[in-house]
Amino acid sequence: MTTTMSPFLTALTSDGPSTDWAKDMDLYAWLIGSWDMDTVHHLDDGTIRKWDGECHFGWVLEGRAMQDLWIRPRRPAPSTMYGTTLRVFDPGIDGWHIIWSDPLNQDYSRQIGKAEDNNIVQIGHDSRDLQARWRFTEITADSFHWIGEERMTESDSWRVTYEHFARRAGS
Image (cartoon, rainbow, N blue to C red; front, side):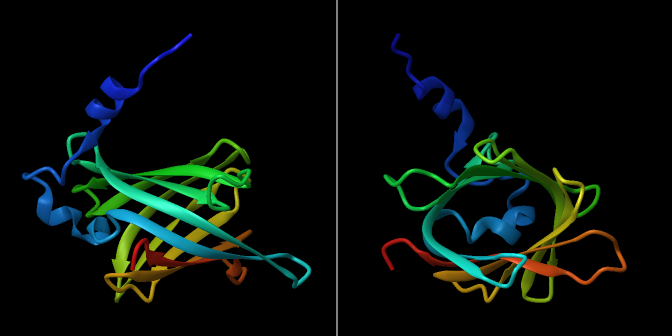
């Protein structure tokens, strides 16, 4: 059976942010495009694992949202992570609803994203009911450092679990 995704992808993707929301979309707009990344996984026992990877960001839903793909390791190697984030701006909270889904690992998270100084901070809960904080730091036009942290309760310290060091593909 052969199916084509072209009508679906055409309806999903957008060339840019919606003109009526364009000013509100700036927080994540710099991510549009493709990125190469190096990933570090900080394990509970203090050891680390490393992979390469890739991520791709684009406008969707008539430019009222952004969607991305995070793939580890780089294709065509067999995936250890292959997930997507949908980021939707909400003028009522002056922030972004963040919905992460990695069906390969059954890993899901819901967060709220906002600017904090020169960083982007997303805070919420994951599918294990842990508090999750994901931060975009050291942001430039061609690179960023993404830090994933978790904790059990508000009184616990944040523990770094993953880091992604990304550079714009082709740069």
